[in-house]
Amino acid sequence: MQVNSSSAVAQARPWLLAGLPARSWVFALRVWLAMLLALYVSFWLELESPSSAALTVAVLALPTRGQGMEKAGYRLLATAIGVAASIAIAGMFSQTGGMLLAAFAVWIGLCVYVAGMLDGNRAYAAALSCITVALIAIEQIDSPLQVFPTGVARGAAIGIGVLAVALVNEVLAAPDYHPVLASRLEALHRRVMDFAHAAIRGEAASTQDAAHLLRDIVALRPEIASLTTESSVGTARTAAARSAMVHLVNQLALARVFVALPAVSVTPDDRHGSLLAMSRAHLRSEIARANDEPCRSLAAMRAGEHPLRQWRAPLYRSRRIAGEGAVRAAIHFMLVAIIFVMAGWPSTELCLALAAVIIGLSSTAPDPRGFTMLAVLAMPPACLLAGGLKYLVFNGVSEFQLLAIGLAPVVIGLALLIASPNPARSSLGRLILVFTLAVLAPSNPQNYDPETFLVTCLFAQLSAVLAFATQLVLPSLSNDRRTSLLLGAAHRELNRLVSGEVRHLAPEEAAFRDAARVGQILAASADSAAHQRAVAEAMRCFDQAVALRRCRAELDRLAAGPLTEAARAARTALAFRNDRATLAAAEALRLAASERHLTVEPALAALVSTSVAFGPQQTFAGPRREERQ
Image 1 (cartoon, one colour):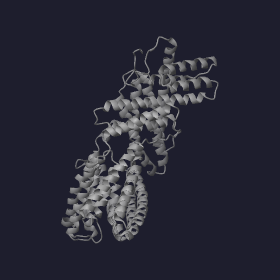
Image 2: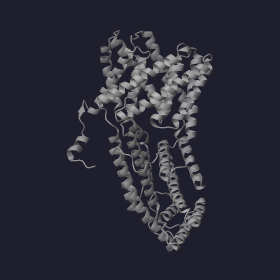
Image 3: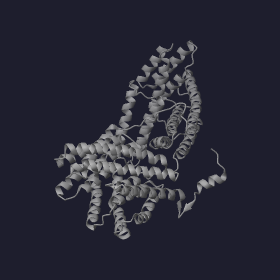
Image 4: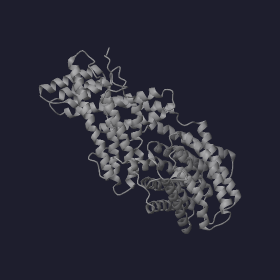
């Protein structure tokens, strides 16, 4: 889309207020108004825990309407699951405190495992399921009969918070997210086109650049899910955006295959040289055709229409990594519980619950220990802000108008921090806002007992410190271990693919799933000394899997025709992963097709590409022009 110079300047220089973009101020105003509305309705209905409504607004403080509504839906679902689990756990282990804590540790492990197998707000919902049990069953560990009414009160408060956010976003016309995602997909499309054009021109292709491009494409997957709740055509936009992502990965994979083919013959046999030239010509035309698919999907996304071909964007997750993370999370909670049991301190339910909250939320972060450290840093300013509001600003008053005025600078200021483009600042702002509301616990009437407040602050600080200490005693899965597991899984899947054990996915969808694993390897090995080697190995497995799947798909199309025998012989050659045998099978297939006057260029190009992919000197680092020894 072309823009004139004035619009470009307007986009480059947004209107600023006090050095911050106007959209950030509008976002902060929406958060403040939604929080006031949630608290007012909760006070009016005399709910047991109105602070849960305010916390819901803080959690759902997202800049666009679709993101907030999607997270709200998963929050309601996770709350319902958590309440049901709280009732079940408290009912079965109400008379045994130790068994109750052990059962809850198992529940934490289960929720963390599910979170590890999901992404985006679905992973958040899995973590919230254990958080809900912590805030209901653990806090009522000495009064199990109060679990059900507490769960109902929490569910009602969360529902009010969700409705407040939805109403304020609708009245104040919160922006949609699909224009932002469309712009990001278009930018990725331009990068993929530049990569493909460079490959066609014979320029050297960087493996690191290709891996980073794959990571950036698949990183949009969890964000695209929010388009479903954005409008009545959200489902169509989601399908179009997913298809665009899959097409971009496919286009990049084709460019990688092309760039690996030598530009000149690598054998003295002219027949092999003609096969290579034909393969390059076919791949060049296929890359050109593949360039049109993302454009169609992006046009359908902007128009709110379903794409002509809807692709799934399957998620890759390692069960081993998720399982080890779940076991560690359960042990972390049990260590914290053992410390409190041995200390014999009274009224430690809040500390246990907050520790479980931090452990559960850290499971959804790329770096659990880093998230916990951020929680440790966020807790002191949250306690100071809560104390300042309670004893300096409110100081015994109960009027709602003063509550609204007093909350304004804190909520708006932290919401501006949440709107920061810096991820660390945004996460810190959200944690401080959530912890401030949790410690302040707005209620009607407000409790101003200083002893209760000091104990709450002490236990809140202690819960964060203990959660971090347990992660030091038993560290989370290291990046080197994570990289090793991901590379091992890539090799195993490649071996199964060679032996004929294939997943029920189209080659394009399987390539997207493999690209997700490449992105995870890139993130896990970022600080490792063997980063480049790990990424090169991941891309080698990716390229070989792409070539092999394309080859098998083309041979499947020939299996029921007159070239059945030649296709079967080519499949047999693929099983040996021998480049010369595969190239010989391609030559035999070409001879069989020429005798019957058939055109099998796609299958021949796939076989030649596979022979190059499994060649002994194959690195996919750029075009090869040397001869094989």
